[in-house]
Length: 570
Ligand code: ISL
Image 1 (cartoon, protein in one colour):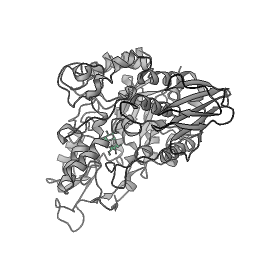
Image 2 (image 1 turned 60 degrees about the horizontal axis):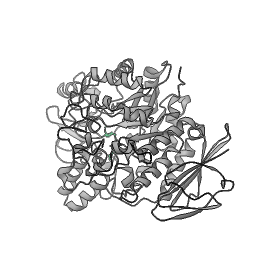
Image 3 (image 1 turned 60 degrees about the vertical axis):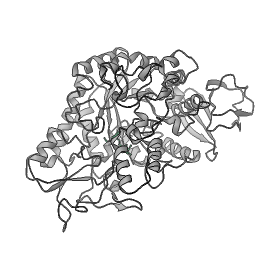
Image 4 (image 1 turned 135 degrees about the horizontal axis):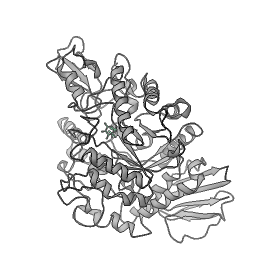
């Protein structure tokens, strides 16, 4: 039987089904499309596939608004297609993890329609978070919302329901009402639904915004920051008062006594390293790892995610280094640059110009995969896919981007500036179709893709890269293989070197049990960099590099533009 903590040596590959592979020419990816492309993932060496949501959904937030937890949206296929995919994944020795979206449902979920239409005293009223207008205001008028929280997708976090005269809370869009986790019946229903998927054979869950489940009693107003029209409710729902209780209960009710072990990862915006240690301490039985956001917030200003600032490498090293040391011993990290909510890593942290794209993509992969934790590869990252060259608002599809654009324009903002922010940080950068080959629509679909394919697919695509041993794809494949064979990658202690250096990212991984030590050197820049090697590394073996035939090691060495190397000594 596999060890319960098999996920410590695993690499996760995230699939955004809508944009991965379309089997029926409707322009939207689907389950049969994924099944047909499993060879790509097996060749890469991925251990776990995480599927973004595929359940029935009005698709207001591309499936993160579920209207039936126990079925498949027809746009993606059927439950039979799902079972076939799962079996095919298992046959290849891989596992499959579902997205669990239970902070909120769709407003079209029968739980919500019953809660809304049953009126203020109906039996399912208490499944969601309903409140009357603020004292002394007229319900439905601006400022009458029960509190001042803003939603993640612009506007207030409350929508007024005229017939019942009350508001419901939605931290995301009005199509995504928040479930009331205080209600034990809600928790029991979610647990039963999770067990149903596990009985079907899935290997775990990625839990969407799971640290937002517990809201502070009284739902107090948040602080209104300069430049914002809403209060920041975060302190009242990020890792709220009952969150550890809810996750421990879920573990008891759903995960306990499942030999062979599952993988659970809590997606947790705003989580601190101290909280993360509690969530992932195995003795507490909550979740295996958390997906944290500190390092993807370092290049934004006080105005939020579209307030683009240059990243300082020293800030990145301070943050990731603190998470490494904070979760050493007890706890476990998730490692990622990319997901379906983030701009493409090579455009954001690397250099996507033709001269440096490949090499900087490999550097980013090397640095991330040599940290301690479970690495996540987001579809297309293994090809070094770059941000989309969108120009007009009509190119964008994401509700977050569209709402932000509408809100900013209504406030009189300059459209070019708003679009510049979206181009840099918009989530659609991650959602352009997977680039399989150089043909029209990149082999993603034979129909019309739901969002434009990046024209760079003629040079950046899986077909070309799988045939080229020097490609970004094969670099990822080698990194994943190294994790599977070299225990220092999984278990070695992490030590950051030169933390104050503005261009060098360097660290060691020391594995006492095997007497092995790894040294990682990465030049985050387009200019050469000469570095002093730490003592004793002069004659070490090169395990991996992204620059062929580099000069032999001496006590000093020059790293070329975006060069990254991994050395080993015993
Ligand atoms: O990208 C963000 C908005 O600025 C993040 O704050 C994001 O919304 C947050 O990380 C939560 O993401 C998850 O839940 C959302 C969904 O839209 C995202 O796609 C999902 O990953 C609501 O379900």
